[in-house]
Length: 113
Image (cartoon, rainbow, N blue to C red; front, side, top):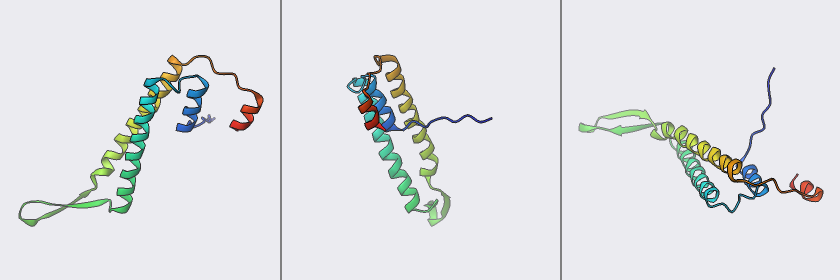
């Protein structure tokens, strides 16, 4: 038996912050800015890996070259992990500092869908 989990995106989290009145919280805003910066960096790293080869050469003494994996390949998972932790922090701020969910009208619910 498998369970299905809904993947929460950054936009979903921002909408959740609005519903719980945390969108103007300084800690939340700071975390959201941090996440956006992390994702820009991740995208640039991915582009660099795709544009370049997976292997790079490094020249040592006496003109000898060694072939090695692109260092970005090793760094990319670390940055994804950090971005995921930032999203978790944003969710924690919503849970701990958020008020009751704002009641939405049926029209607003339809517009959100």
